[in-house]
Image (cartoon, rainbow, N blue to C red; front, side):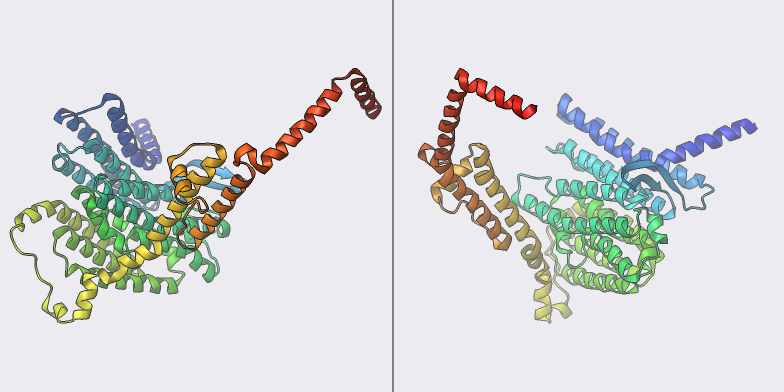
Length: 519
């Protein structure tokens, strides 16, 4: 009996060791399995849908059961457990460990993720029945679930960043789900670019943690005692990432544009889970943030601004999903206020309850729209309508959309357009690749190959013009140009030397000179 107890304890310990890694891996494997099935089996029709749904549900329900097992079994770690599966990447003295955590915070968020993902996937099986991108939707949603589980269970910033990117990419794919609609693709692009700013902040936090702490483990960051200024700068990178992912001011506009995706993705992404990822990141960094009171004040102020922005903008919305989106923005802003005031436990309770409630509301929104289809849209409150300036600002969403487009989206797109033009008109030309764009550019404007946008675009255009001028004057002129003439002269000279060396006396002279040098 004692041997059986020890064996059971050993099996439980081994299971608990690998569970945090297996849990986020299962949705990824399920997504890969569906992809293989789509590529090689080419499923089509109604009969192909049930198997995809079963694979997806198993990949979320099984992790849910595993997490319940871990939560019920507890352990000797006092609810503050960390699992290190070894070194993931090492360079010199620096190493990144493949570590996971299943403390109370991690288990709470992971259980919320798997439960809501299972409900949403089951809802999607009926809601997306006979949709063209049925299997593609389930693949993207499973990748998202895996990313969120990596964020929840990560033991360090590097593993969390993997989940951060998986969740971001899958959200971009589902916003642009209807890629044949220009509005969907433009809004997906806007959300993608805005969140890349947050990703830059996350990478800044990782770099500073490596430089000043020497570790990316959450536990090491919590125990590090740095100068308050360095701690503030380190935490600031993660705060920027949290603000962007949770759609806080000044990054708030992207979430209202993200509703182009199917309703189930709106429910789980922008109502229940993704929008709370930034809140979870700040909860995980509680010991670090508590060392920087000034940064907590900034977090509270931005959260308060976001709550006001979401509340006032939501009052003038005329459709259900937009109203729910701004209501979500308001509630998440209040969570940031709670964190800024030091009420971290209250923010966690608010997160869980809001995620459950908002997911249900988003999933029920199609029924709401059918119910109110024949009724006129509700008018704005009287107190807001009387204040014409505030009413106009709420209608324009306080012009944050235009400001974000001007400062982030358009410059990024212009730089990308300029780089692509230089690649096609200069780089392709230098390596000899024919392109239609090259022909059009040279026929329309032979002197100025690329038209730049802004300072960076003008600099790229100038560099491209110099390269084009060099090619045109030295290489691509009829007859070879100047460089062709130089190469021709060198060729004549080498040919003369070669003909001399072919004569026996000069060949013997060269051999004797070589021997003299050697000896």
